[in-house]
Amino acid sequence: MTVTKILNGIEYLYPENNLIAQIKRTLNSFPECEEALTDALSIGQLKSKMWLIDHLPNNLGIVFICAGWYAVLASIMFESNLRFDKIRSFDIDKSCANIADTFNRKYVVNGWKFKASTLDIHKLTYPLTYTTYRKDGSSVDLTEMPNTIINTSCEHIDNFRLWYDHLPPNVLLCLQTNNYFEIEDHINCSKSLDHFAETTPMSNVLFEGELPLEKYNRFMRIGYK
Image 1 (tube, rainbow, N blue to C red):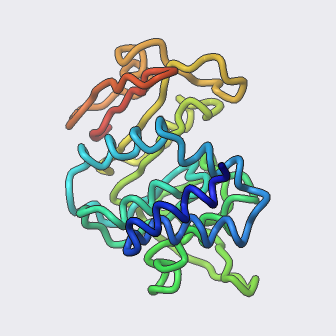
Image 2 (image 1 turned 90 degrees about the horizontal axis):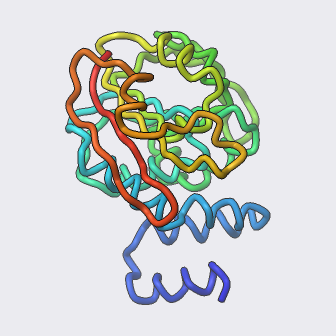
């Protein structure tokens, strides 16, 4: 059975589920991304994101999602009870921004409550001045300072400690990695939660924990440097 047929069945049972409509719209616009989007919506990915949302404090202000991929996390956050001003998603992969914007179209058109941009997260400065693009291709320059920085893909980040050390103080950090060493792109896995803590030193830890999943364990730390 195809993903589209599965989504049709879910939408029939839950016609008011906005997330399902977003997924279907994205698949219709980018049929070539079905396999990757299926991975982004896997049980492990979704459980990890719901776990994050369950432990985030409220009033997150401006949220930067680093290595945001298709911004599925942003979509789930918009459907949650979390309060925040807006979400910005950054990924070095040029194919991600348009898909992420389509996935979150409702919030893009709502005064850019959400916006995805193509940027190397190693080159982010704080406050961040950057160029992003409207759907028609025209550019807009923005300057924004995050109150919250989220990175659920720390296992993918080359020179991770360099990136981490460059993060600003007094900003809430929510970071996830895993011990799934078998994936080639997982160049920064952690052996344990203690190992992850060594690479992400924090002066004020609000939460840290381990989520057992089918193929790996997910590690998460939330707090301030």
